[in-house]
Length: 386
Image 1: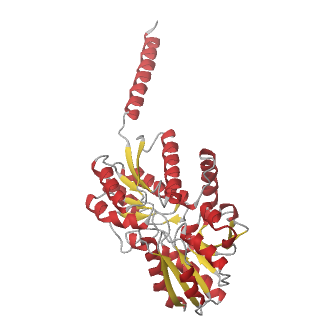
Image 2 (image 1 turned 90 degrees about the vertical axis):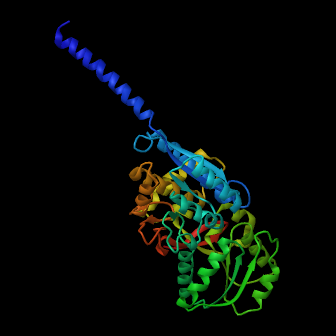
Image 3 (image 1 turned 120 degrees about the horizontal axis):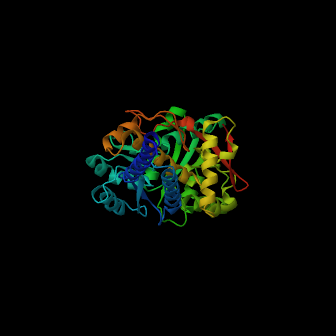
């Protein structure tokens, strides 16, 4: 064998060995670690389970593509059961035991508010699934959120009231962090839209009947009823309203946007309206909307991977949180401070809840323009208009 041929063989062998070694190095890279806090069981399981499903699906997909920067992504998930106490315990494990680089969740506003001081002190970026404006207003250095702030729902709802010439409303809100935040937004924005809240009622998350509250509301001059809460409360109210033959138009919040609500409320929810994100009605989105393809592709993959687990807006919330975490990891590696900076500088990121444009003064990155009016018609969610 001539020298050239021998050299070529040696070179080829060397390249093979080099490639093998390089492959081993890539495979040996330390994982990027994401902590997840989801209400997988308990009263908010209809939120947390789809969030968990979406997160696992996205992590599996990105690892099949080689991970991020050659690093596999590892997901550490804890079930918070929507309990602030359990969430506090879990977040400490994520930070101190698993040394995660970024956290997605919790699923609910109350649980999120309970752990903000912990993640702020630890310096670990967190992307919450709670809707309360209090999560990011005022801005906290390490805290972000993926669903639109509840105040954006209120603004879109009040836009509708103005067009419909509705000036007097009654509000019925659940006594949780979620309900309290929605109530505060409804109250703070009313005068700006020329709306008078003539009666304010509330209910407990475990209440089985709200006929007393509805009776008091029926005796007022309210032209519309706004209910702020998550399942099963709003469904109970819808059924109580039907039983009482209360004709006052019913308006809800995005917290009911799941198949579970439609099952619980049945035809008692017919005609109810609420402000929500486009991914609730993806097929009805106009062609050319930058979110449509993203949502439809993911929704199809989700329904295939989880048969019988119909895609909901909460899966979208989980997906957006992980999408933002991936964005942070791509630019910030395993450095939490750099991950935080990367998330804060996110621009034009197309997600389920909208198109994210974060900044040092806005850790949600969405606006009321990401909300549309939706109606329940023939047992389905349908858009009123875009």
